[in-house]
Length: 526
Image (cartoon, rainbow, N blue to C red; front, side):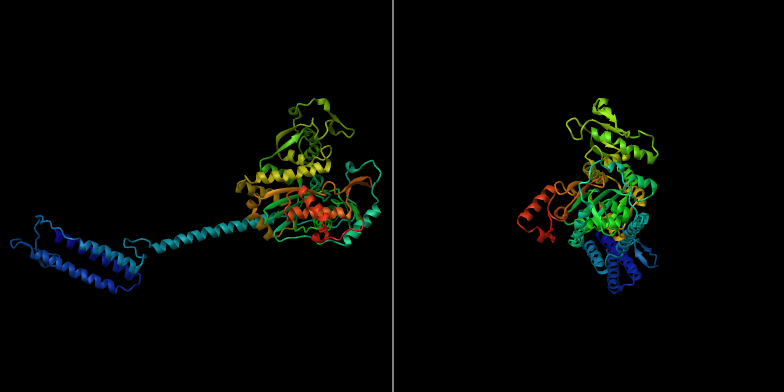
C-alpha cells in the first residue's frame, strides 16, 4: 500500500512538473533545470513500478497496459501497513517552494491572470480614476471662472448721486479748502504700503440695490476688506466707513470715500483705500444684492438676535427690495407682535417711513433669536437709520458675512456647486485663475480659520464733521496713520481686536518707536 502511495505521489509530482514546464516555456523562460528534475521523477516512477511488480505473488495474472507491455495485476488485497517517513510528499512541497522562488510568482499553474498582471490592471484602473477626477476638476474650474464678469472700471467725471437722507440741516463745520490742502500734502508723502506673501487682501464691494435694478454703477454701500492670513490661520473682516472724507487726486475732487467707486470703479476705489490706509489690496470682488439673497437662500437662511428697533427699521429697506424684486408690499415683514409691544410705540414720520419711539439698544429694545430668509437677511444688513446709523450697519454686515461662512461649512459638494452657479455669473473680479483655483482648493480650510472683526476709522480716531450739508468722518494725518497701524497690528500682527491694537499703538507712541516701526512720516500739524 505504501509503495502504491509513493507511485501515486511520483506520478502526481511528474504531471505537475510537466505542466509547470509548459507554462514556463510559454513565458519564454529556460526550462533546463526543470527538465532534469522531470527526468529524475520519471526514473523514480519506473523504479517504483518495477518494485511493485517484483513483490507480486507468482500466481497473479498479467494484464496488457495501454503501451502494449505485459504487467502483473496488483492484488486488491490491502498490503500490510508500514510506517515510513513521507519523504516524497515533503519533497514535493519543497520542490514547489523552490519552483516558486526560481520562476517567481508570475506563473499561475491553475490558469487565469498572474499576480503581476492583476497588479498592473488594478494600478491602471486607479490611474484612470485619478485622471477622470482631475478632468472633472479642471472642467468645473474653467466652468466657474467662465461665469465671472470683468470689472467695470470706466471713468466718470460727472457728480455722483446724493441720497437726500444723508443731508443734514446744519452749518458746515469743516473748511473744505483747508482740508483738501492737508490731504494733498499727505498724499505727496505716501507711506509704504504693507504687504505679505502669506496674506491676501480682497476688497468686497457691495452694490446698491438701485444700481442692481438699473444695471448701473453708483455709490457702493459696502466696502469690506477680507484679509486671509495663511500663516496665522485668521480671516479678518474690516469694514471701511463709507462716509470717510478723502481727496481724490485723479479726479481733483473731495468727497466721501464710497464715491471713488462712482468715479473710477473697483480699481480706483481700491487705490484710494491703499493711499489713505497704507495697505496693499491684492484683488477686488463686487457682488450685488440679488446675489446676496441667493447666497443666503442656498445656505438655508441665517440666525440673528434681532432687536425690536431693528425689526421696525427693516421695513424701510425691505419695501425697496420688494419693489425691485417684484414682491407684494409687506412681504417678509418681521411680526412685531411677538416682541410684546403696544402698537402705540410706533408711528409714521413726515416722509411716510415706519418708525418707533423706542431708542436703539435701550432697556426697552428687547431682542429675539430669529431665523431670517434671504430677503430678510438683506434688509437686516442694510438697516442704517435709527439703528446705529453706519456704525450699526457695518457691524451687522460683518455679522452677516461671518454667519454665511459658518453656515457654508455644512454645505455638501452638490450645494456648493449650486451656490457657485447662482452667484458667479454676476460677480465682477480681477482675481486670476490660479488664485481662484487656490481659493477653491483651500475653501474648507479657510472656513476653519479664526474670524476677527474691526472697523476703520476706529472710535476716537476721527471727527464728526459737516461739509456741504453732508455729515462725514474727518481724519487728520495722524489719525489716518493710527488707523493704518490698527490694520497692520490685527491683519499682520498678533492683536485680536481693535482694543489690543489701540494699546499697542499707544505703547509705540509713548516709547517713540511708532513712526520708525511703521515707516510713517510724522505729521507737521496735529
